Image 1 (cartoon, rainbow, N blue to C red):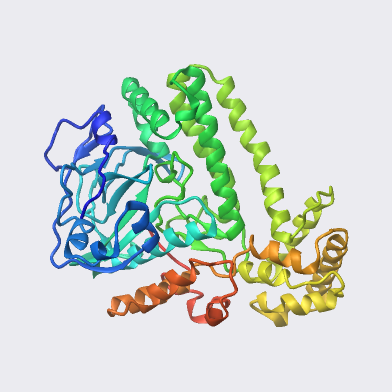
Image 2: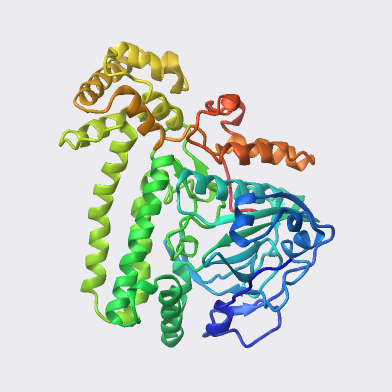
Length: 521
């Protein structure tokens, strides 16, 4: 297989001088060289055609044994030196020290059609950053990462991509809920693809350790490689760099809120410096609309990373990055100004996003109240977020509130609850909404088209991923392929796939993997 390898990260940045693959603290180094662990019996489960094309890989190559060997770490690409990245991070609000790629190994950077892509294997074995873990991943979490990476891209959400999902042939011991009940699961590896896997924590660790020369080297490299339009690095350019990162981070989170995605573990080591959704661990999709929902069992007590708090956490994480960059900028006013702008821009962009979800083109002062009343109402009886907004597009300006309520009825988990006070509240809000769209110039048909381009019909609901996992564990990969194809066109009607346009089934409400997830993978 011929790939255009153009490595820069492991050539231009300082490397860990120790070549032994042993758990250790690493100083003044951005990465450590390490080879993936060879696996027992690797086999390809699925591969994304679109990501193949990004890298310049053809079908014949995908079908080859060489492809499977390379993207499970059993064969090293010619003229490459795999490595694991060094970074730290604030986890659940506290500095966690050195973290790094504990089970991810970067193979190479591939250039194709004037774009550069870093390729990384998740679950490829121990690295110097594995701490007490084994560096491996299991089929369960790998299916979720593979499908969600591609689904998010097609939803229009900035994200890392996934080239392939493969079994290793090895058994991996896991405690799925950290409750002492260990069991063996099938080992798997996902090949992740992105322009870069640099995170906020990649910069924070050098500031915390006062390794300022290394910090400067990394920031200068990042600007040159990924923000070249900013110009030659200097204090003012570092400030512009931070502003760009803040803008991209906010843009990403607005998209999360739009489609109902909850990342689950927004530690600073899990936030991309390029504003990409990265590290698909205990993520989930809002089913019942609930600002306080988080899928992560580790976060159930404080719910720090709940759906409604994601924009605030984005700001908190940016503050920690600002503290790291202060070592280079040496003044606070510019950094503080950018953080303040984030707050203002969030209010503006969130309002505009909500208007688009409601099919509103005109801007009226009363829109804030219309949205606030709706969000309160959505909490009063369990309402499926995805279905609600999709059904709302079916309303016509001429409808009565009673007719409108019938049209959205399918989105309620307990339709019989919509009586008396709650019913009156819904009829009142629907009346306000119908009056509001009467003032719009869009026809019913045009408004529906616009809303259906903003509100997806299909998302990777937790139970859907779980069905794919359970079938794959039995050697049946049909559901993985079905969901992969379905989620390539999430805004289309796809009438033949209507079975997936459904509320969470009762069996999934409290099922592990559907409503409760951990970082165990």
